[in-house]
Image (tube, rainbow, N blue to C red):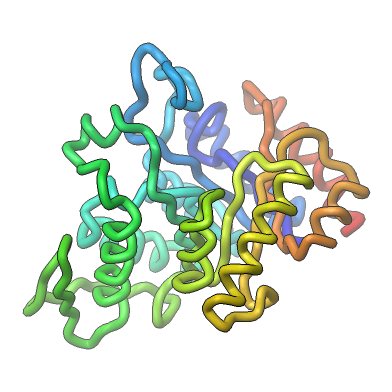
Length: 280
């Protein structure tokens, strides 16, 4: 089992000193990866389905990962997730290629399609056709990352006669992970990604998602073992719980913490090393 740490750009890690200390401590403790969350803006006042208060700070994922890359050496750096249909894919391709270069090839590109209408409205991004738009945007980004002469012609994005350097260190492109708990999300992961990311799930919820992923993989002629399943688990995690997730073919647990300051976060990392990672 691999272990990741969620929230390297939010909560206490919105403070750069804490983000650097947590990243270094997590790497030393044996965490395999660090993950950001994302909301560019949040509804104010908070109303469902907004997940957190509007005052919650989120450092931009690309900026946060580039920052902690400079304070670490080998830990992988994941976007968990970037809301792709809110972004300009050409600009985002440049930003993430830059992160991959600055980290010497450690980026994991986690993608979601989003669900907060006020956030889309504030950005001037259409809320309809989020799935097809995300798939086109991803294809366009891969073209910019991997083609000698990048070009893409689609319904939502179109370009040619341009280039974008530098290219990512990872070729043909960084690892792609799709998030989401719907049949459409499972289908996208099976068709387009190396992995799938489930957020705030317990073991039973994960079992349902894995069943959906298996069905999607079977539909597209892919073995479920070829899809790396990552879960940010909800609730208390002990060695027995880790085994139950592993029995469901989960290969990475991205730990959620409740720390409100640097001391609490470093204590959480130390406890995870002692109780989980050192016994893995």
